[in-house]
Amino acid sequence: MKLKKIGKSIINNWPVKILSIALAVLLFFFARLTTIESHHIIVPLEVILNENFVPAGAQSYPTDVRISLRGRSENFLLITENDIIAYVDFSAKEKSGYYREPIRIRKRGNALFADLLEVKVEPREVRLRIEERLR
Image (cartoon, rainbow, N blue to C red):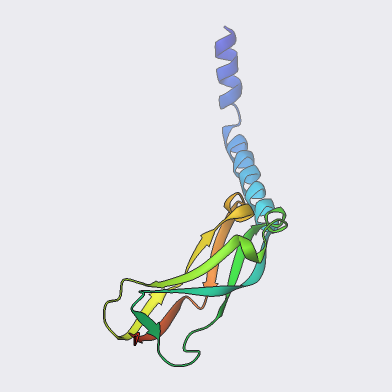
């Protein structure tokens, strides 16, 4: 008997109940979006080369990159420039020439535990001419 009553009360006015749940979910996500902020930091760029090669030309690549972090504001309080390392890896290149590689990041310290939604690097890639090291 009680089970029938519970079932009828759930089915009674079901369009209104579904609409209320959908509205609650929509309000929840809207509230979450308003708490998302952006934060920008500048970190030095580390260039990794094969030991037999060197970059050609003076200052042929950027020395600093801008990293944009998006997430909740409390996640940015503990993250510093030392917690994110930006690097580009040309160590697999075996010949002299022009190469293009994406800039990658490695998190450490407090950045490992931060719940970030998005991490963007500007510029996205580095174009570099490398030459054999003269000994």
